[in-house]
Image (tube, rainbow over the protein chains, first blue to last red):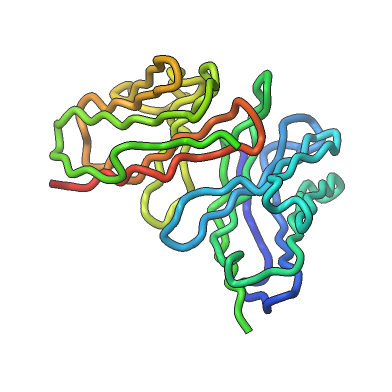
Length: 121
Length: 107
């Protein structure tokens, strides 16, 4: 059974960098699939941030692309998210997910529990 | 970006009711449409993929269908554990986009 767990600071100051890690158990991230991040502002809907293929190719939401980096860390079987120059609008629950491939893209099938990140001074 | 529009935004129903939620795509997405269920305070859970394929372990009272750019999630007999928010999501192209959600509440 694949399990994912997000970790990282729950509070980030405006203009600083949000950094989260997703530890995967039950599957080796270097074996296949995409791995991705999705966020959900409090009381609102879901927004795809980006995905990384197990080979290292990345795909980002154009609305965030200039500020986002997703990386694989295969030795420790985790992947990470960095979001720079954060503002209050980046306050959200951040989910990591395994992304099942389709012929055109991918979609989340296994999700972490999510971690709330608040941007505030 | 492909816009996904769900209707209704919320609905009230009773246990045993048949419930239908609709999602419309702003352009053709073939059958690249998924449905997720989100219980309060929990991560979303995949229910249906490719419009009408039931994810393993999901009860058969859930079903999905497609007609052009319109997609439907049906719960044939609503159970207490089904009161949640439901999201559609297109996987036809990036950026992946979700509908705004439909909250199913107890009448």
